[in-house]
Length: 288
Ligand SMILES: [Fe+2]
Image 1 (tube, rainbow, N blue to C red):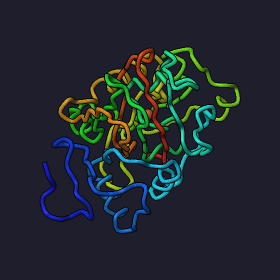
Image 2 (cartoon, rainbow, N blue to C red):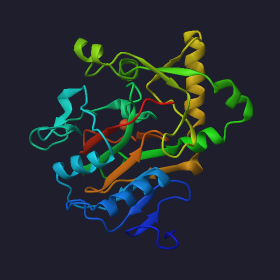
Image 3 (tube, helix red, strand yellow):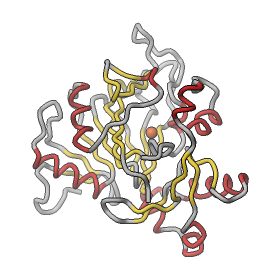
């Protein structure tokens, strides 16, 4: 599935017929020229998920790449800050000796979600570098939310056209597991916010569904009715033929567009296997 023609300043290989592309000859440890970054950004808008093959990416280069996309989020869960870079958030199940500690560091990532949807300005790009990866499981799956919207029938489209959903980090964390609860200060810093259920991507101008696991309720609808509607749409959204399932190799880097995709991690055995990732999220717009 090589890209026809010569539209890109690098070699590009599509990962599925619908979304995802691998960028083959960009060295992320080096400074990236404006022309190459412009190509990366165009590919990001077109393919929604970008993969860079295994290579050494120092933390400062990951942050520098993120800054090319926009303002980088400083995460409220400050216990995860990595390498002295508050822009980076490390998820690891290794103890100080490098042995698996048996705990999954963030079970919330196992459900389909979009990063930062619990903020007024939601996540734009997320950039993850895989430091240590398990031999089995620990994959990252992506689904296409343009396609999820386009495949809804007209009755669904009419029903949700003007709905807004309340997104709440405290809800999505606590209903899945009671580990690592948010502090009062963290909770105060992340009050629930509402966003349109159907948003228009600010750059591609295409409509997409915008829900995921942080969506708790629907504005103006009884709570349980809103919960049922969100659960139904979250289950309808991932279509197998519009999904990319990434099986990691250590040293790979993924960039994805949170405005038009959802993602989830698959389980792995945190007792026998290690998994360490470094994540950086770029702030986006207020969804419209
Ligand atoms: Fe995520």
